[in-house]
Length: 316
Ligand code: SN0
Image (cartoon, rainbow, N blue to C red; front, top):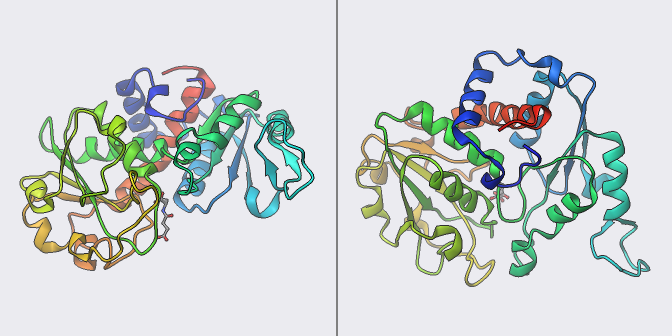
């Protein structure tokens, strides 16, 4: 693997899945591959799981880890080519990415969507500038429109918990007080398309994800109907794609409740976290035995480790 920013960077998902499950059993078996190698993790936005699990994954492989909250601790980076830098930005991405490439063998980048300019977000401007100007492989730690390390961990978790060959997986919109990116649901859909599941998306009208991403996937605005006989409920809020960045915090009848979970086939509850309790999901659902959110979070380590090892070995 030469970079990891989308499921399209994965040639053989089955092999990558096998590797992640092997690493879960024997996390320290490949230490020689990361020895004397350095990963730099750059955060333009907050993180808990991604930061800690990727650090753990890299250390399990024997790598040195450097972490920087770029937006707080670094210079303000200019992303526009040809910019006359007499305003707020202090350092151009050309130098920043070039310099970090001198210190690191792999660079991880986290950058959220602006939710203001759809075309800028969907062009993945910041991530692509790093890919363009860095001379080492780039790993997405969540970009404006995708979160592939999360989705890979989700696939691992579904593989571990499914009881039928082709489980019914429902991606359900849920309410939230703030406007959130479409990265997690977009990415989840992309990865589910590459895996053996029956995927259904349910969201309020006006909240369909990009038609390009959901092509071929059933979308229903009837959440109860979608939940019937589901094996997995994957809850997530996202802001509108069509009315870009708009949100609907008042649609509290979309909250995932025990009553709705009872429509499923003893379905498991999933969420990428962080989650707003009793807005996105009620306490009794997320605290129930059917909630596998911590198992998902645990798998973040092995997803990241399989990706980093594949980059180090240039496999998968
Ligand atoms: C991010 C998102 O993309 O939805 C990260 C998820 C892994 N979530 C948030 O920003 C939640 C912030 C909040 O206010 O609850």
